[in-house]
Image (cartoon, rainbow, N blue to C red; front, top):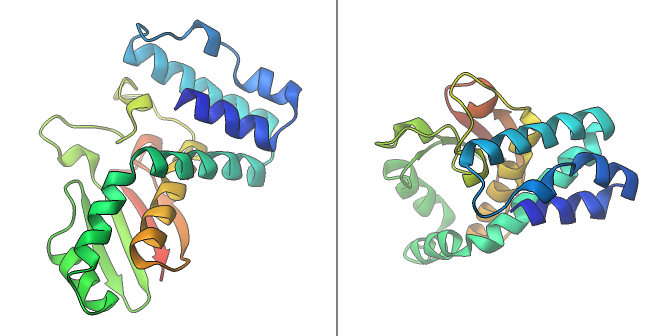
Length: 187
């Protein structure tokens, strides 16, 4: 996923910005600790926030989420299979609300779906589902910029399952101080 961040920064920012933002990535190896990786990612977000305008940095991270949805396509494929068991999107969404995927909860009001990630609900409490942040100390927060990656993933998830475009808004994030992550999906 570090390479994915680099590709997305390269795609949407100039070479000088990419070098600055990705600074230190060459020191990370397969043997790097989770804490080292999380610290580096936190630094990446700080450098993105300092050197890239808001729209571009959100675009960078949302595209990372699109890439993550490809890597984790089995989650989407399983949801698509569940969807096919129902006659309508409404029936499917009602069933998903009653029995959401582990670590999530859903609340629906007409054409607006609130999706919550509840990573702390796992037996081994997590701050984020992303492996890059598993080593983020409990007392540290990271910029909400990072969570636009999840926003991109959530968008690709629902577009894949419902087979139509959706709009997603990031409301709150567990790694930036909230108890849980919240996304609004406009169906």
